[in-house]
Length: 241
Image 1 (cartoon, rainbow, N blue to C red):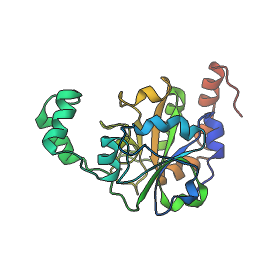
Image 2 (cartoon, one colour):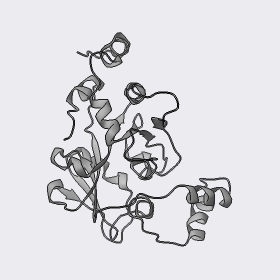
Image 3 (spheres, rainbow, N blue to C red):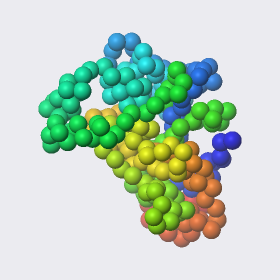
Image 4 (cartoon, rainbow, N blue to C red):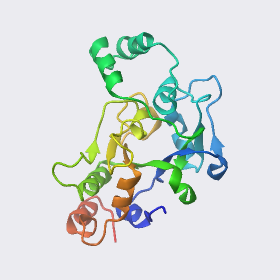
């Protein structure tokens, strides 16, 4: 059952809806849908404003819009490793050498798709079993609050609750997690290639389903209800309950 995020949403003062990444057998529950035009390049985040209007991006192994999304989300290898590395290093300048990029690609694998349909858009409570991650699009103050929340139940020596790995914007929403069954968060939207599609003061805070449940479970004993957050909001001229 999907946890109730209303209180967390209110405390954060979020104006942007939460965005889910789903791996599902059927698209009907997610309508209205938008899709990349077949054969036409399109960044996953070019559909960001459509998400805010309640629409869901539908991608498949046959139609994924961008080669990066095809590789990281759908497992589609559209070019040779040599061509891929040459593009990332020589054309895009993302690593200092071909050797480093090859090492990184060997270490980091793409998402392993389970069903024919990948969907990115507003949360659907009745599709919680197919939800893989939830993304908060937040300003620096809200990011700080979520950082605290992600580490609230974390003990030393446990897996790192928040990571900020190198990778494309689309890979940061699912492919770069160490384990989707572990409570973990990724600070994303750090890919300068996709940032033109979102507001300049926003970053992404993407969480696995277990981490989402932990965040929604923050109660009155937590910092969420203590003076630090209220004082920060007061300094920003924002009234919170």
